[in-house]
Length: 308
Image (cartoon, rainbow, N blue to C red):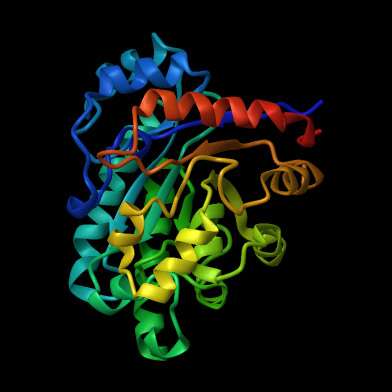
């Protein structure tokens, strides 16, 4: 029987990278306690400085709770050449920290565009058209930077990089994901397939279709749900990404349109052995993070038989 390993992340406790979406801060100690108490055995790092940034201290905090470090999210404005040097520096610094606390499974450097920073993409998240995308020259710059970051991270730390396709960034739609993967090094850059961002960006709730299309590059999985009625209202009312978040576009698992039993069956068929990371963007007014984390974990236990 395959083992279903499930982690969660600081964003599920309101620790979000966007100033527009930050909730009241919950300290890392409480977050890790509640993560472990609700049945998760892995975490991502969260914003730099949220958890201890010194190796011994971080290893101690994770170890006493039996929690593995799974990855760290690093946003870089990959389209802008002026951001590339600092992007490499931040990525390597972050990768060295998470590599130093690695357990039996090496964590991933989770690279992303600087999502939410480009007004047109932020305004139109969930309804991107080809005319809003990168030009051929911009794609070359974007991919060159991603390759450089991933190759430097691998050379200096041994860690591989996964790219996080993400609404309100330049890689949101299925065709944009495909273009990014065509232009990047398959040995050092894979994909973290995020079910919620995929279906919102694709305007299609068939997450398995996306998994199948990108199967050779799916190295890591984020489990996030997406509420179809909120997605419909977002498109009808012209909400931007942050307004969609405030309306609960990414709902608790099992309360949206993602077919998670089908996702688990697909992963089992591929003999996926990595962690699945739950992400539930919790904003003020959305309830207690611990209770949400508990319900998400209980939902996954209820369908765990699909991962067999």
